[in-house]
Length: 311
Image (cartoon, rainbow, N blue to C red; front, top):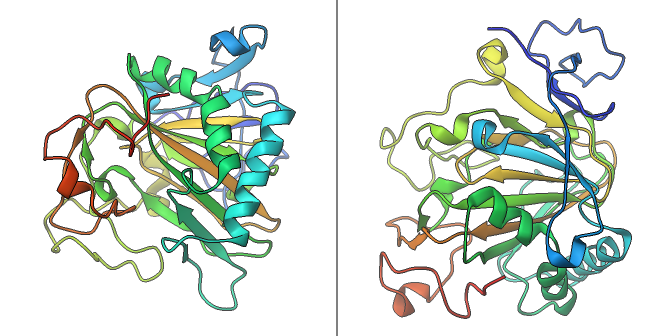
């Protein structure tokens, strides 16, 4: 296939799935990066509170399942997000987990903290990401699904392997999108990578990050994820070099992953849901688990109420 590269400035690109001999001097550890100007970057305005702030859009969400917005979050809100993430790290919830091996830096995740961390709730309610998500999804009633803190400390080599979020979730529908907001500069292998167009395909069998076991699904119940790294030329992989304030939005069904990191990488991800999303209790544990929700909300019901506040 022809590897098309989309560029906005010098920080966004498609990863060249070739043999590592690209023309650009900006290189990842494994794959070279090449650039070609093909995508028009359009200034747009998001939300009444942000109508004076121009945001650069890099990508096509409907086509690719992911898009980057440059300069979406300003310094004041970034400070609030940083306060929230550090508060979660200082006082982790029972859902917190370490997704890296002992001796390999630290990859820490935590979920669903907005009701106990005031700075996190304040950020979610003030962030223009909700207006962006509603527009991308065509949602009239946008709601919070959950918050997710992902921190890789400096020197962590553990990858976040290729996966979809949708099979881990207790929701069905098509109006689901995540905002991936780094609080530190990320580039190369440390940034988010998304397989373009994968959000239109099937669900793939989810496996644990460390030992790659099909922990919840019986083997063979879902399709196996293709060997993306083994045949990168068969896929178009999106990746962006990101500054604090930039954000990537990607569909719940989009295949994505990240590499290790040499520097500290703090990410706050907010998961949004639209009008068509319905409660879908699973016969397997979901992540996050939403313990007690099945007792309050029947299968097939819209996701409403205090669990999922309107934004």
